[in-house]
Length: 396
Image (cartoon, rainbow, N blue to C red; front, side, top):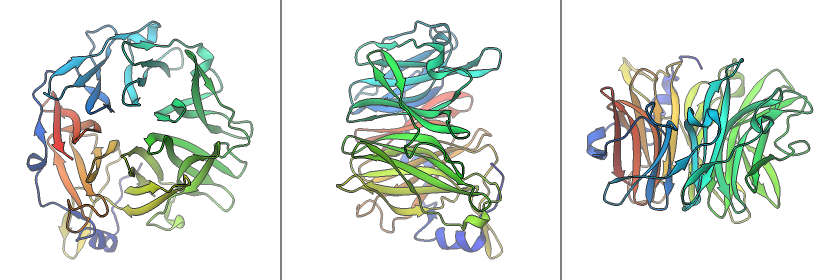
């Protein structure tokens, strides 16, 4: 990721009624939640109408913990049991639920090569680690794990694995009892071709018992062209489709493009990532036949500053999308800039009465966000502020 300035003409077009606005402060929208967290919140999900927090406490065993925030804002621990050595040390990278059952992934770098050692957790009462053989997620053919979601058949893990053609295919694992089995990617839209490489970077539980997978495709047919990509499952097969961009492909110059975070509500799904190095957000929904259609693509403006007649927005090298969420009236996007600060955008959903112009409200977080989730009628944001772990909520 490179530090780049958004083109002045583009920002002038997007920073007005159709773009971002700064009419409210963070404290006007979010309120602090008075809970005593044992450590940083590294992942979040909705557990029914309550928020599920994945925490990391170096003094605990295992260090990863799970807590739900009750309707009275009490912090209630969930029983969690580790079995394998690395499971006691890892932090939650991804969490998903079906409203009752929890599936999560923890990871920590270890071993001679410093690769991430993964542990998978699942349960509706106590959440138990399900120990796997080393070759399930590791070994010389392994890529990485990049998300968890649910569809009509249950939970799935997504990531990458050695391709039969070239590089690393996109890959999916599903449970068979307590064992997680990787589906064959060859011959599907998840596989690489000699002239096209794919990568899954995010997964979301979508309406209608579906999962939405997203990432990027690198086309090598004529030079190098990178495009954001989504995968949807129809008729038992995965289908890939490119997402619209705001910049021409020839603007890439090797700069990162792709989706990095995704989530869905009852109707709408929001995706966040980059388009040739610039921050980007997509809003879309599924049709009855399972086709996913993007309604709007926007360039979230961050830290806008006007210099003469040109308005620019810089994207720090270390900026990271920490998550997205969809409530009844808004899509929410959270970004950490890597220097102890961050931004949350509130984006009114189409045909909602929450906004008058559909513009994205930019809110400067008083700290660095680490995770976001929508549960019930509230959006939850976790982070660190003044060297303390913090939790905020807002009405959705």
